[in-house]
Length: 311
Image 1 (tube, rainbow, N blue to C red):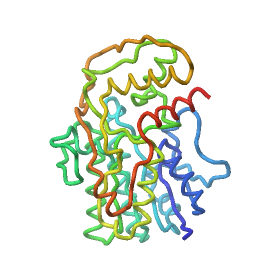
Image 2: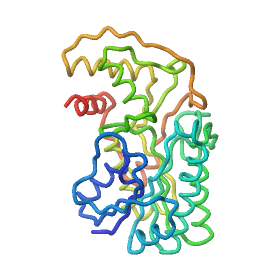
Image 3: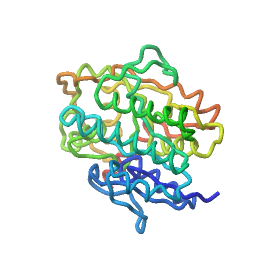
Image 4: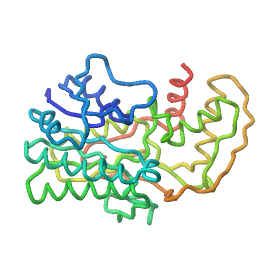
């Protein structure tokens, strides 16, 4: 069924992939984004409807959401920014989400709130179910945890129809490559120059890395399944890999793609503040309720990312 949808943060990494997929499904899509996170190539299709406004602009939110059936909320300031611009992160991730929730409530739009696995902090037990306690270890993670509470507050008090999804670390083409880039683009930048990947800490910290197509599929399923309303879902691969082994996979796949034999040793530096030690998603709930199933294996996803970069 064709829907009218708004994607806040629709010009970002996950948001732009989501926008493309929603258009493929023949939905009427509006991207709401201030483009402050725009980095490198754009993944937005031509002739897409764009409202270039701040998430803190209530009047513009009301205009954008007025006729929407569903709002996918992905507007966010990235984790590394919380170390040098914490107030900006709190304003956008925390208060911005409050405003989005309020406007959706007032206009009776369904809200798919895209949170983050960072709300859990380091795993207390493995695998991490949705009822895993929240122990955020950065201002970014705290802002995402707070945003979830606003969503649930409007849901319980004012009848907001909402679903919370918690993606684990997503990767793939069009990841940002600027100052706030994640590990995979940073590793690539060093490998392509013949430099050793730089690992912060021991490299034993693990992540549940999920190819962006699988992440987007989980987000869309959260909207399409009526039983999902009022619930929370992990969206991940359901497998973990250490950061140092991730770097090794990237070196291996880059060599396979280019035919270059690389003898790169890993380089280590001091740990980053607030870095989580272990993440592994339990995706049982998403499988059962949403029919979610990740399809892209890590090595295949890394290969696709590197192929995109090299091409």
